[in-house]
Length: 340
Ligand SMILES: NC(=O)c1ccc[n+]([C@@H]2O[C@H](COP(=O)([O-])OP(=O)(O)OC[C@H]3O[C@@H](n4cnc5c(N)ncnc54)[C@H](O)[C@@H]3O)[C@@H](O)[C@H]2O)c1
Image (cartoon, rainbow, N blue to C red; front, top):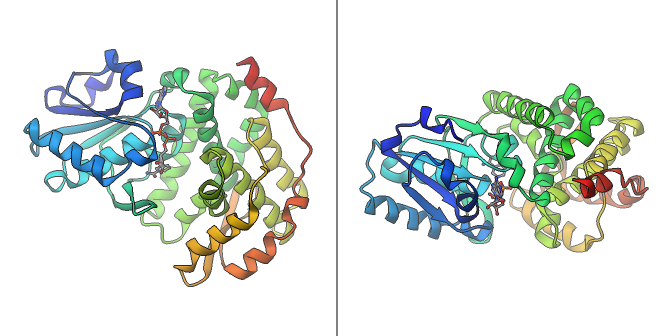
């Protein structure tokens, strides 16, 4: 963050950030041209976008203005959308300040906001000039937010990087204590994997769908139960692994490796929840696509495949799957978090 001035035209740059990030890091911002937004998913709306357009007009921002989003996925998503549409597009960059935004949200060129009760309903594909992932900023990030980032790191390793997966199995304790060297490797390898996938399939025609591993169920859980994104996706990944095992794509041992890694990092593989509502939410969401789900299965740790399956078939598959998942509590990850 302190080197940001080297990447931008400082005198023509306007910073977009949220009040939280500003309160921690304003002293390190390259100038005091700051548009501040609030926090939470509700802020990721067209109303906020409109307020930012107004603030840009007030400051007489023109085509030479450079926008920098400093914050988590919400700030980055909004900044990218505003920059892509204001005056038909001005240049922009991100300083990703949450683990989730460093390993996931800031990479890939999707910029958008929520609308009409749907997530990311309005948006564009557009790439920033740069993304800075300053892992020092994670020192102030709450545990819940770190966990959301870990869930996406596990996802990346599981779908496409067996070496990263093994590294995580060996270094999860240091990851939890945010050991710099370990976190930098996780961020670096996640960014590399996601950017390789996006380079091959920017518009999500096929391969990019692998990034939805654990998210079909995860999104439905998040929508219908009071759990965080990271927790919901973790349960979704455990189920997708178990389903891959049940279909004979992977061995029970491989599915167990995924479950153990999730638990070791302090995330759940199962939660008490209203399954009826979860399954209804999947049905409701996917009906729009003709009753077919693009579901991400594992062929091995580090190898994923997308298969189209009818929604009813998936519902049958889910039945009793929780019994297949190993429910032995593994408190290693949790106790390590207490130490941290
Ligand atoms: N564009 C994409 O490809 C993509 C991919 C994944 C997720 N997303 C989006 O990202 C959003 C979630 O992002 P997120 O998890 O970063 O959430 P977030 O942006 O809401 O940040 C989480 C919280 O952490 C605070 N925070 C940020 N940096 C901090 C720091 N360094 N120290 C202390 N607190 C800090 C924020 O103020 C906020 O309260 C969702 O809206 C999701 O849809 C987008």
